[in-house]
Length: 112
Image (cartoon, rainbow, N blue to C red; front, side, top):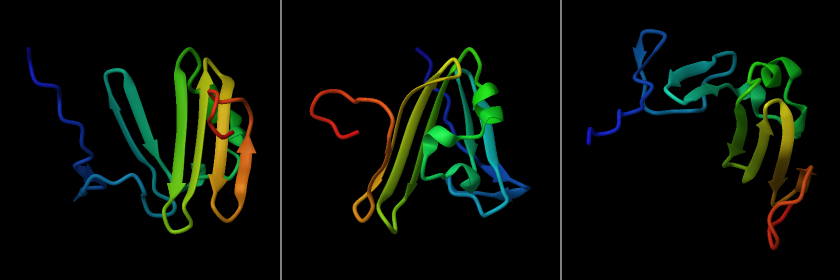
């Protein structure tokens, strides 16, 4: 069995980059591998992940779209899942603000 391909963003704008998913403001990191496309951009770090702009959701037609955003300084986390353009679940929370968004039930015993 062949070893899996190593995934890395080695060069961005002609400069070597350490693996990083928090690009500077106004910069988008993008990569594509078989079965997964990745976009990293501060503009999609939104308090209500269910409000992701429609053109981004539409671009995932026929596929699964996952939004994951976090900011470690304030311990904030946001997560959302779409299946074929339909929002399945969304959660955004932080210790200071509590639950900012929770659009659908999670499994029993989980917050949201």
